[in-house]
Amino acid sequence: MVTPQELENLAHLRRARDLIDREYAAPLDVPTMARRALMSPAHFSRRFHAAYGETPYSYLMTRRIERAMALLRAGAGVTDACMAVGCTSLGSFSSRFAEVVGESPTAYRSHGHDAVKAMPACVAMTRTRPARKAPSRIGEATAAAPS
Image (cartoon, rainbow, N blue to C red; front, side):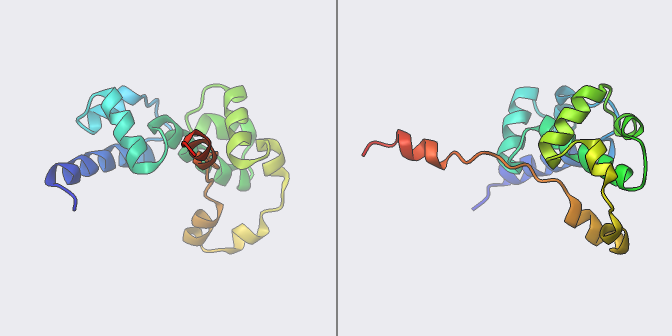
């Protein structure tokens, strides 16, 4: 059973996540997000990771990459997409994009995205959402467990 305090913490975390979703192109940092959640930065980072499975910064970058993917599908240039989503370094943006999507922004942009353009926007957003492939820690736990 969830305690009233845990429900309150989740509500505060949702406010911070909503801030990220709305203001992804703005210069956001963990202390700013933590203030929205009414928590200290360290506590906020731990609680956010526990609730959503990734760090606040990782969530922010995933949202930025998601928006950049839509811009690239619409024909925007890589530099324009990078700056439009709030990234300031083209190199870091390209590296993170390749890490999340599996290919460079230029390669992604060069593909025909006719199928996505034919989908309703709500379906396209769900089908093209980048998902981080976190390495499994199950093997580590099994290896560390006494036999």
